[in-house]
Image (cartoon, rainbow, N blue to C red; front, side):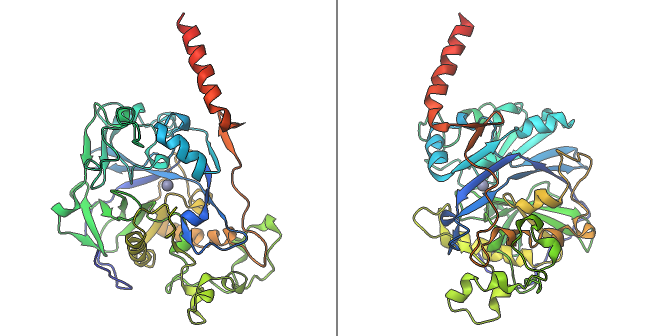
Length: 415
Ligand SMILES: [Zn+2]
């Protein structure tokens, strides 16, 4: 990757936008922060709260509709076997009430009108349940997917594969080759998805094999605007905020802070957060904490990033996009998006295309501060505790028994 640190990003011109709507995948989870960010602020931020969004992209000239990511399938106990262990060990809490295909159908988006599902990457919390889509829906994956010894032919043919054969069997499985184009935007290699500059895939390696972001043109012309669909390029926006262009305001505006927490003075000086900025304990000069991201990607042995230095390069480039007034960055697990933006679930007629005139980038920018510890008190409470199934708390340790019981009931039903 060529670094374009703090340079202005040149966007290729195009007169064609895509329409972008956001789907709340309904997944709520907590994860151990140390596997995702460093250095973890302790005590108070040992867990990250993750929600999860996906995007419906519509291209008017071709009439094609595309899903970028699918979130978690609601029957997550039916993922490939190797994931059952992983979900138990890395994820302390998980609740999913609905499948994305179910939400689409309910809102009048016929599944056979979705020509492609793009996986930002193959991890379980983004791939949903592809088997709910008809065979006419192609599956698009990032570079290296097909050749990865870990993945194909998929579970159960390959017992330790994290993807199921049923995800791609009988449908076109298309792998993006970023090398076939010399086009670059910022420091990223690019694939022009519809061939007219309306929607790009970005080569953003480091988290896992074939990780891609999306870059959707939300308004056309010389002053085009874009939504950067981040997938898991990073898992927490404290990896890209604050930054030199958007330092933490002082005092922190009252409408940013959780009112019911009772933690925050009025006015709230930004030192409440910046005094604990990891940059201070790492010897960065004073003044920097207001405009230096709080976190970098985890480099522990248990890191969620398979190649942390490369992942950090991808994130460093993302900071340039974040600082561009033409771009709003939406990483999949940013809670603020669901708090402030319209979703297909709640408001199916509303898209995100007017994000700039609506001021949504500003509105979402500082919500994550509520997650951080302050004055020795912990950040936001976990958004979910324990495992949930069918809308009720679920003792996952009894999964074996449940499975056996279901098998028995299925047998009875047949006889
Ligand atoms: Zn994820």
